[in-house]
Image 1 (cartoon, rainbow, N blue to C red):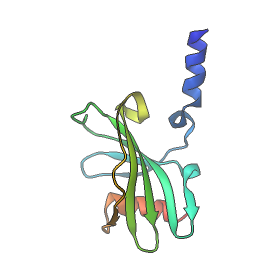
Image 2: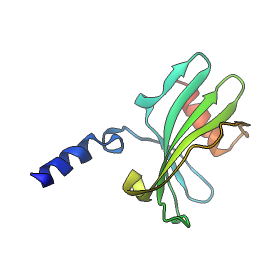
Image 3: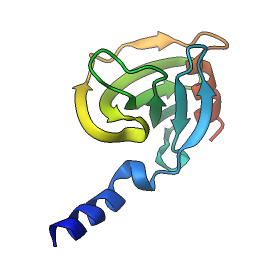
Image 4: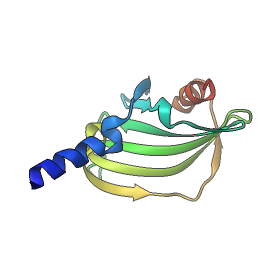
Length: 124
C-alpha cells in the first residue's frame, strides 16, 4: 500500500507533470527550461518558474533548482523570488535547500540567460 501511495505522490509532483520547454544553455553548461503553462501574466509583468540543471554539482550537493522569477517586460528587469535546490537533476531527489531572498529587481543584460528567459516569457 505504501509503495502505491509513493507512486501516486510522484505522479502528482509538479516537476513530473510540468511541460518544461528548453530555453537556453549557459556558457558554463547550465540548462534552463520554463513551463509555459505556469507563466502568469499581469499587464507587463510575468511570473514564472525555471528549472535549472547544473553542469556541475554545487557545494551544497544541488544538481538542479526550481526558481521563481518575476519579469517586467517593459522595463526589462528581473526579480528572483524563490529557489528550491534538489540533489538530483530534473528537480528530483531530496530538497537540499530553499532561499527566498529580499526581492531586488536587476536589469537584464542583452544576450544573457535572463535575456533569453525574458524573450520566452514576454512573448506569451
